[in-house]
Image (cartoon, rainbow, N blue to C red; front, side, top):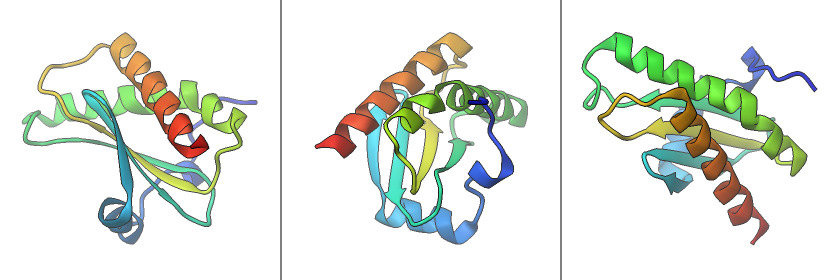
Length: 120
C-alpha cells in the first residue's frame, strides 16, 4: 500500500474539529497528545501546534510538517488493525523544537496506546 496523506484523509471541517475536542477522548505520549472520536467516515487526521509555545509561524509549520510525515509513515499500524471511521488530532505540547526521530518515535508510541485502548 502507498504511504500517502491525501485530501480525503485530512481533518479540516470546523464542525468536525469542534466535535472532536468537545466529545473526544485523548491519549498522551508526552509531548504528543492524540485526541480521537469515532465517526461514520473514513480515518481522518489533523495536526496542530500551540501558538503559545511557538510564537514564530515558521517553527509551527515545521513541526506540523514533521507530524504529518510521521503519521504518513506510521499509519500502516492503524490500517493493519483495521481501524477506520475515526477522527484523530495530533497535538505537539512541548516548548522545544523536536527532531523527526523524536516525533516519529512518539507517534509510534501514541498509535500503540491508541490501538491498545480500542482493543480493551
